[in-house]
Length: 448
Image (cartoon, rainbow, N blue to C red):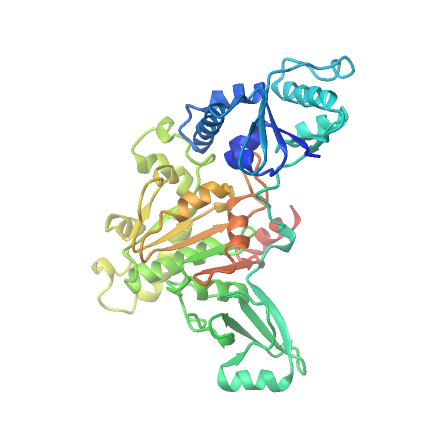
């Protein structure tokens, strides 16, 4: 017997396709949800677009049958809009009927009372709604259609103990056929000699040949003024410098260097190697798509406060790179120490608000999206599909530091990308663990 699924407003605003993700069930949408969705339909951000999409879906269904009685769609799901806001006498003292959350819970309770032979489940991304629903005897769950198990999230690398003869063969030939199965394309494997565990070497799995090879693109050299400080950074830089890998995701707590090395690799490719036409850097404004018109000044001046962490990283890199350049001739811009403004003015670097990225096509560019954990899966898809021919996209973020309501470490676009794209040969990922900013920053990241 089909379950009855009552959807909260936040579920539909998070994912309009939630209407079609409960195959074979009866979906109930309280009238209060329709009224709440209506309040968002004029917004210009992602929530507004989702609200309008929900209205279009329901209006199309309305033409196919009665939403009051329920309209059956292709996957044997029935979608129904329920008017009742009744709260029975048992719960009326608990649920104040003038609050929308309580009206939705009241509707779910009314549906439960009217259908005693069916299991009624309220689906909400609001923890407090789920708590209140449970308190009045209603089964409530989070929306888990777009979730990953963060504790088991793909890290991008593995340790592998091998016999001494295998380890010796690798040292001699710089590659071996993978002794085990199950590695993903562009996954890194740290070979450890069983006879002497202190002997270890970093390798990268080449899926097309099923071999482990030494790192080809980064061997510890200086990259635009900086060098790797640990194995995870070495792996990350190797991916960032590999033009065949068109998308790289970097996850790590504060101070692990994910943004710094991403920008360093981007500047190396754009300024030093002239591989890409320019470096485009952006980060979500919380929330993504929020109108910048409330801030004074030009687009650049409005965006400056959000980009200050990027400026800090670029100043460090340009200063470090300038120190290395002091003994060279023919400097960039005919200066010994070019400034950040020089790079911006000459078009090497563009700082672009994600607000305006929808609809653009960005070919032959090195794109860095910082703080990508604040993107929904749909927003992540929107950004990735902007990439034109010859473009590389780098996503960095910390899924434990999320500022957007109803997103968490398991449902944000960055985590979803890592897990869903790990089998693709043009995608790579590394999780950075060791803090390198300072000892104090590392302590704060570990204990708070």
